[in-house]
Length: 340
Ligand code: F1P
Image 1 (cartoon, rainbow, N blue to C red):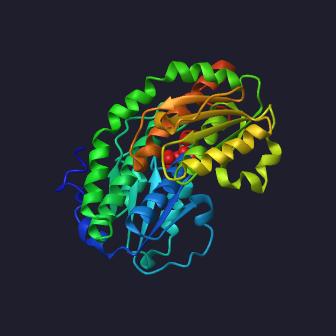
Image 2 (cartoon, helix red, strand yellow):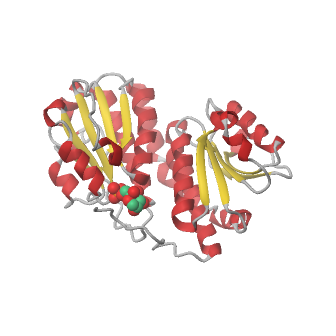
């Protein structure tokens, strides 16, 4: 709410942000893990709302390859810790003069990424106690949406009325997130579906595809269940062959323009005997049957849906991990910041 105020946005990113954002012709986002998924959501926002070309890449690949840089590209890193070695190396080894400026969206003000970037937005999510990034992800998404609004305003590519509509929706976000947290007992009960399973499939369409990727990553990280995420429209191009009664399929279904397409993807799963767990807008009118369990979600502005639908997927992984008795905070083989 505070950041979205007229006089703070885009200055929240740094004193020179206004002038700089007006020059931006393209955005290159680089990040790892959960932060990379946040960047993938941002691509839908930046291109869809502000018509700003955007590329997103994992830092562990980006840092080692030659990148053809287009003029006036803003280089954006996203990181909870600000110390992830691959992301930091990507910032340090980018073809320096080629970029307009560097900006980081980061949770730690004293971190190397913040110190070494031209502009910074601190997510201020507080310390992440567990290894798996959760609240940092939600705040990264909000930060990236604010970046989208700031870029749209500076480049005059987002109509003021649409900006106002999104800012108004943002003001209701914390209440919606509380509503989503309030269904945790229902989600805890659904975790049973996964107790005896070794695999799971996550589906999403549009900006919910990265949300599905993040849901699958969380399940892998903390419950050690093999999980894959696909854009729902890709099912028929391969993954459908995996679907049977041993493969729970988790889907996020906000009420947006892709809902009808998504519903037909879900039918493809049901027809193959797959067990569906659908987190759906209560206005989406998805009905339950023997194979389909529906958890109703609060209605939300479609632009904000990725932020809301992340919550039930995080809760689901948490309850599955608790059920399986794995260490939710310190998963095996993982470190909080990957500094090598
Ligand atoms: C990136 C990341 C996290 C993940 C784990 C390992 O960290 O991949 O997303 O949950 O903690 O590191 P960061 O750059 O966002 O700090």
